[in-house]
Length: 168
Image (cartoon, rainbow, N blue to C red; front, side, top):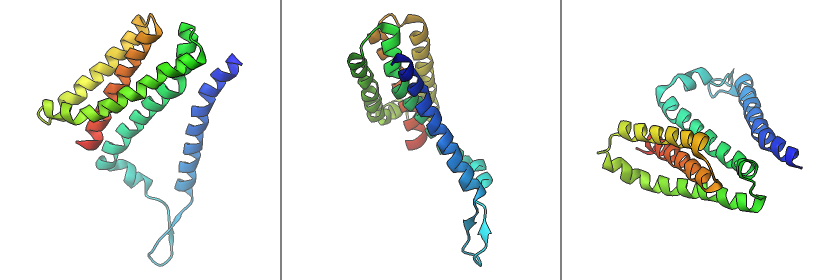
């Protein structure tokens, strides 16, 4: 049973990524109908992905989604495996992480005002907080509570950075 849980933890995100890539390939290959004379044209992926404004929104949103979803997907297994906690207790611990991230998104505008509406210091502090949380998780996670605190710090920092990219 335990090995199947680990496989599902890896298999589900991998299958989702492959499905999304397949859908993008289909959209790229299948031409879209044009209003100009009914001629079919390929979707302008190159134009879309080389636009600086699109990349400014797309990349942070993708990184935030990847971080958030990966933490949510594998965290229960990590807590169970690393600290010998049962599934029910591990799920309770993991529920705290998105709760902290939610409050971080609420506080993000206030933090933005505190740095006098300059996004670079906020992004820098968010990045350093995420790195600090990751280092603490790797070297100082002696209990499930500490691991959840460090993961919450990472989640919170990424949420603030994403809010900075997308909202301010």
